[in-house]
Length: 103
Image (cartoon, rainbow, N blue to C red; front, side):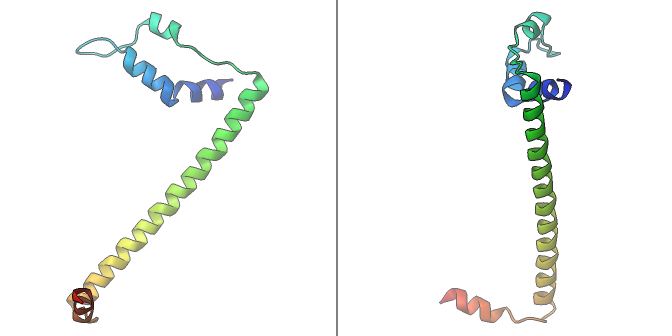
């Protein structure tokens, strides 16, 4: 139940509810009455475990994708720097590419 409840309270609909319910001009807060009015869906313990497990696997998958994307971006930036360096030092001819683009 704790994992399910934490995930539920961090979900987009719930955070939107908190944001829309905040009061105060200098310090935003949510009243106890607002907290009491928050609808909380409480599925069976088995369903809660299934939901938590599914979300955990999905989050792990997304985390792996983020790491892969960052590695790819780093590699592409490194290759871009090497290409620029090679063009500036004259190690590769770039005028042929400029003529092909103009045509």
